Image (tube, rainbow, N blue to C red; front, side, top):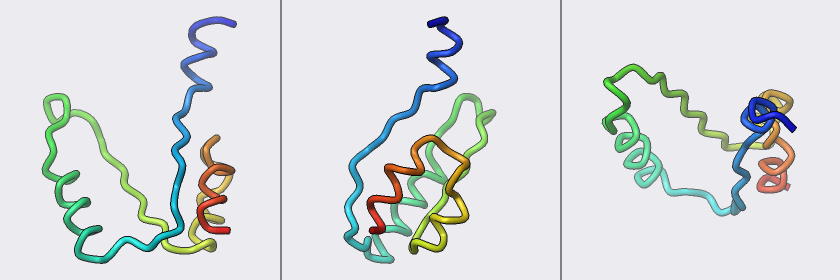
Length: 74
């Protein structure tokens, strides 16, 4: 396998819990991410907060990790 193939197919799948994150904690996490530095402010950031199986359905198919994410809402 070529290196470029490895890089293109790479993703990190984490083990997710179905436990709901409290709103104040979620806002603190999002704020910390918003003010965190990036490489000379040149890297775009996209943060998605999924709170339902329906929201996950909309995201499905856009990432190779979709199957792993789906388990957290089942």
